[in-house]
Image (cartoon, rainbow, N blue to C red):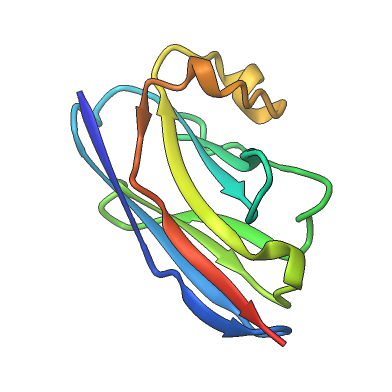
Length: 130
């Protein structure tokens, strides 16, 4: 079992930056594909960035490349999503999810089928103020 807790959301000016955190606890010693999903208001949830804990490989959706950056804390149980140059389309609820069975090439290839993710956090809201 893994528990995921997101934090760091809030209201940010367009063009500004924000750092979201996903703290994992529980059985974190095995490799996971950890993915950030974004759900804009009134829209479906979509995967935007993934991190494979074993290899440290990453994937970014084309819509966020160059502005979103994944990193892991020193304790390796926290994943960060840094977002710079925020755009109105970045607004929404951000969820962290983990899949313990996903192969690394799937994770780094952008596999984001929600039903396959075993664990989800409660989400953190990002609002972009113009």
